[in-house]
Image (tube, rainbow, N blue to C red):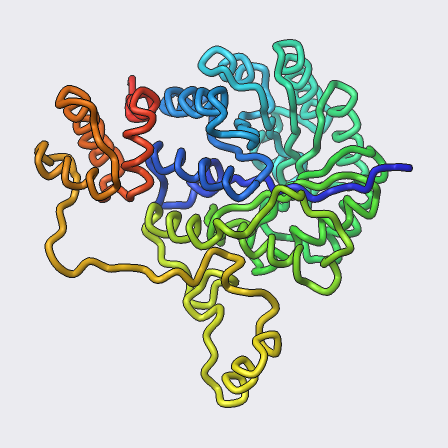
Length: 412
């Protein structure tokens, strides 16, 4: 009996999310996002750019966390252009084992970006050379990204995907780069693509027309209906270029509770929502972008009822107006706000105040030498993030000081 296909989550906050114009994340913040994603059972994180020099120490530090079993079972993958130069550089700078290779496939982008230097057949030739090299060099999983797939000729897209598969690519990423698809068109196109090439499909959708969660889940549905696994690309709080990407929590809620998907499609069993509230709040703080009041699951009004009919119905039986419970998302715990004296650890902290902060976290240092070493790292971390450190960040630095040092180190 053939195994039923699954839907996996592949978060791209640390690649596409950090490309949000005028915003970004420090390397420590990207590391924390990876840790929270792992806790939520997300299958894979596209955690950075291995051919970009300023990412090198951060990437290798996170790969070290994976070797230690701290970032496990989540898979850490890098994004590079689908050219041999980027593959070679990624392998020279990092110990990465999973890569997404990206190149444009639409007539518009081939003409508009390459300005006559490359045609459709050149694109396939360049991509396949990069895939072959990645496989030859020991990359375990290769996904090939068809940028602007939604505006690409479907027959060309099938040829492109088949060539990638023949050279050893494990997946094809269908990129709705401009949010051009609607739920019906993406279903039709992905179903046709998956049936033709018989390989897992990644759905990478943007929100330019406000349909990103719908297109993402319908693309995944199409891949599954064609007998193939699907990998939905998400970002925390829907961060991303222009109007953003598919929000991680919204996608999970849609897969678990919408009438057409609930109990009919297999979501990766490792996924759990209990860390949703924590990761959404952290990303909001790190990016400096408030969570919209009406954000599904994690917005301030997601479980708020005011009108008489709604309030009455919710109090009688919350299933009248709530499809899922707030506790499932890790909400409901009382949050304490200190309004009196508060000692913080920052880039100009002294040892007394620093010890006070860590004592409240129930972390003790064996001697003054260790305390001074961690204090120095905390100072660098504050310079690094330009924000007061969260308790989880402070605990991470104390627990993994050598890895934290790598994350903070830049070598221009």
